[in-house]
Length: 161
Image (cartoon, rainbow, N blue to C red; front, side, top):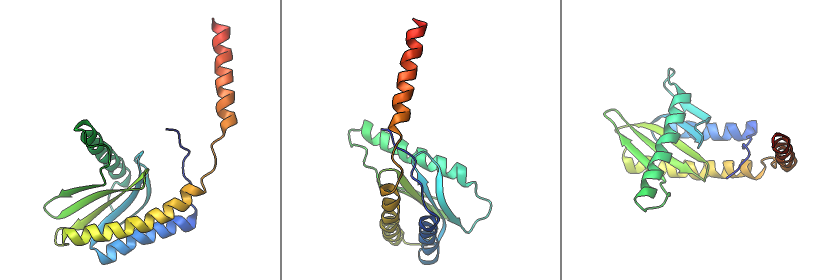
């Protein structure tokens, strides 16, 4: 599947950032990261200054994709929508947003899991609406570049043989 990179406007990024801040205020979330499936963070918010967001983003995307592949191997399809990790002090939730994004949050253990899931669901819906606008306005792929490359490649092969 070939897709061009979605480009977000500063206004869209600010709205996505506001969603993460809302989670911090209303669901005792200490960290939230919106990530694309390649592992690139789009926006993040955290109360902890020293986090390696790039590594967290890559690992979260890999975790979700690995979980989806395990499910596929068991014949359950690739429809994993939520991963929950329970640790001593925090819970980590990774949820899909649309087809190409995921949201990672880290919340305190004293937050009821059901409340965290409801809050993540609400924010995911809001983020999907913002992301959907960006996906609808993404620049079209340059088909001429692809055609020119194929023609040039074929010509070079002819020269070699």
